[in-house]
Length: 603
Image (cartoon, rainbow, N blue to C red; front, side, top):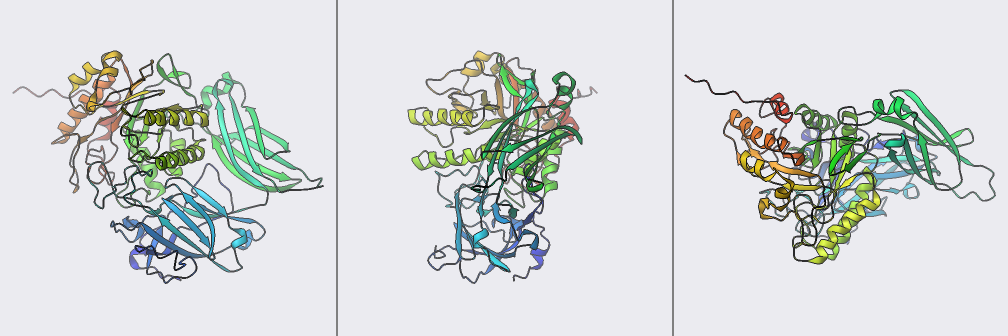
């Protein structure tokens, strides 16, 4: 067994349950110290490291080796890495099936249990699992993971992860290997695979789609029953029970009188009400499977060219959130760090975040659900267009939508950003077709949310007209967004708002990147799209750009760049270590359109 170093002993692994929207009682978190090695000469498979190898290093999972919290903190290229740890199965799991889960491994993962291949997965941002019961032995077991992430491959979804060793510009340190929680889970031979909760807001009903795995029972008289208990703030709403005849179930459940309950139970950032759910699979009097979940009653749509939330016009005030941390990179150092980001965002008067080029940790979405914060879910893009790039993003995007479908906080899906991965969209029909296909694919998977085809510019088919505009002058912003016709024909960043063959059809206009005002308030050096020299100057500049959009008759929402400084970017409202640069109450007042600067005294 590995002995922890003094450095490692100061690092606490993530221990909270990784998917609180789908939680069972019988689980074991496998985060913590693992054996570790680089495989720079790609000899691990040939030498069968999955069966025997003298590992030379250790690492703290779920932090990538590039991060300080991993205990390694090395940023050089190591495209193939290996992990190993031992585990024993609790006695309480003895009669059950054992499933091994990975929250995310960047980018390609091969998992071995006791020297045998259990599963292979491709996609750096989405979960996967394997039933490893038949590979287990009594006593100690061994799990080995081989992860490969080709640092300079530009046709795989990588988001802001730079393909050079040293981060620069808008690109940051890479993440290689395991970067979300690993855990074991015990299930019976009959169990729930997943549940989809689709709110029908106007009927005050929840549509439930359940998928189950049931054992073959030839000539058996035993049947299975599903029981679903829904409560609101601890009070029973309904208890429904039905006999299972197939492995998929579709139910529409009414939650009571709309007039009596809906306004007090709807989910919004201002009132993040949630219904709690317990789902049980029974055989006679025996409970075979037991899952705890929740959902929110929330509706997002465009009505007559305006964004509506829960049947009322809603102005989105978002902040761009890269989801990077100085010590964990893409992995939040703790649950408290996640909650802190959300609390600080709300304190500044924002009602949402645009998660930028990252499929976020499920616990971030959980706390957005609980605390009340809108989320635009965005795919991490590739940078070149190819057949492989199409296949990779299409597969991983479907997995991301499926994983996060039930989170009421997510109101918009963004498969592409600023033509990343489709760099010649203006001149190539097949790249425009790819943008259209991602919009249609997303809609086919989820009709309950808005979809942006290509955030920032060069839109094809899209539910919103989103524009990136880093002009720092109030007067020019006021003029540009004084009328819809001017806004959609402008070319901020020297880019067309709509791609050839596509045009504005009344979609709401939102400026979803702007500001980016740099203000150095820490030891970090860096850049921004414009610069402030003092707190007063920063407040003045922030007010100028925000109020220009608030005063616009054509803009229906905004997303300020950005929440925190990130590596060489110092254009955050907070420093990289989450310290406010100015009084956050002033930011909130500006976002509310209330703050007025003091006039200088005349001597």
